[in-house]
Length: 127
Image (cartoon, rainbow, N blue to C red):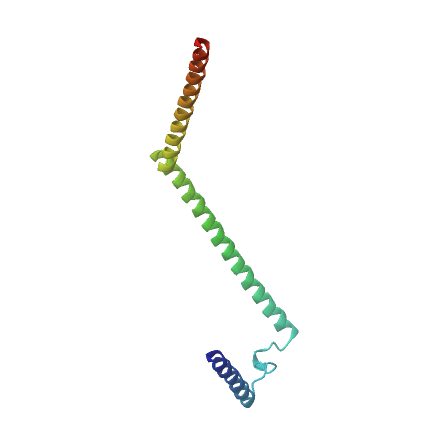
């Protein structure tokens, strides 16, 4: 119900705006003729000015991108250097610890299997 009311209000607002602009005499084609160039020379001059402004904006954007990239490269280098000075991260230490534990577990499992095979073979000889 509120959606219908909201839609009706929106449509009414648009209709009111259309009516007001029509009464005021504003049209898209009547865009202040005093600001339009009077000659071909003025038109070319305005195009040159706009082009120069666009080039300046592009140069400024490229410069800011290069500056941001160099800041990022410096930040990354400093972080890498700091990590190298501090040593391995806690996650790396935990990974190394788990790898050692897995190797020890595997070695003890291999010894147990070897012992069982050896013990099993000697018990069969005794039978």
